[in-house]
Image 1 (cartoon, rainbow, N blue to C red):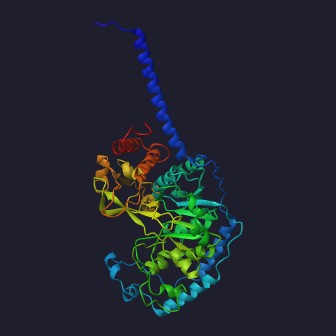
Image 2: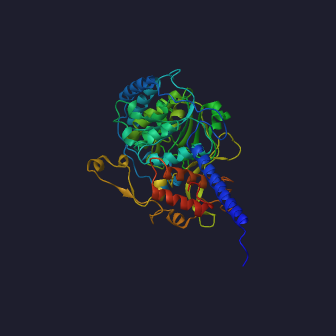
Image 3: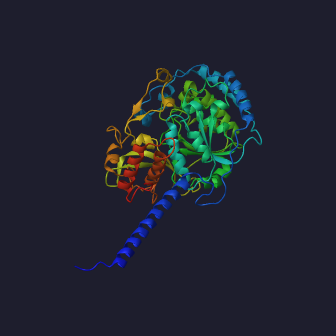
Length: 501
């Protein structure tokens, strides 16, 4: 038997301990580096400029809103238009006669509304000088949308954005307890519409919050994002894009062709008669918008008129129950009515497809990829609007989660109801249940036939899961079981040890 060399044994033990220590330091460094990126520290990985301190929305806007509300009430639509069922299959063969017969609209009613609309346009207020300041991001949250917004906020910082952010909700009842305090420590301001609007009775639908957030935001220039529209690369540069500098309003296209009533151009003053042909312009995906309030204050106020009476009138006039019912096409409708310059991004949106298990795309789409307007020649992905799958740590990875009380109906809250839901990993009916259970990718990374993979070398899916790890493991949305499942999924799906264990 060979004698034990104690010196070599001690050296081996010391070297082993040192190696383990170095590995732990490396792991912790990765952990804290990522945490700092997502914690909205004042130093970006890409830039050393400080994030500006956010000021509260100016009081003059609340005063203007009171006058706008009086103006809107004085020129109400003369009838309510109920939302109708417009089968998607009819869109491709829609004729102007078909579009003309979906609403209980007559020439007399249209003439009355044309006069009311003209009166509103004549009385739109001028831009309040010095009321707003700087550039920033506005995101809608509240209720279940806060979970999606938490992912979008994380992605915004992960890709390197330094823009200041305002998160808007209807009132404090929509806040996840403690979330605004958590955001404030990260340099993000929570805003509540109820702090600026005395009479909230007309804000019956979440779609109506978007234009109000744009109006009341303290920013003069706004990148608006829906809670489920995430940047895949740093979007800060688009404020310097030539098309934005030229027009001051940049909108992105949706899938759908318009289904507006032929009376719409007549009522809004775009035409002196009812349309005789089907419109050919593209509808808008308002999940992301770039808006200069000084250049387009009146357009914003006119869009507020459309949204103020949106659920009862204008949403139905503009879509007639077709795809996209809601706020989204009120913005281009207002811009067209005022006949002002604005930009529609020329690149058609591209669909992010499902992974069929081999990396290749299936025939089904799960999200919309929108292009960078700074490049008008080539499609370069900038935003992923997750219109089908909503990315939230709880919605994907909980066992049986209790629904946030703010997401319940008034009757459910009154009765003390407690509603629960399973996350996608536990819900066999979920479209991504199998992928989550087996640790497979959801996003297709390979081309479908001749179609180019618009994501290129970006690995946005992995980035999203890294953000959801932070949300699921820390803060007000954290849960031990969710955290454990997310880390297991990261490890199994993307390889390597979970970043935060």
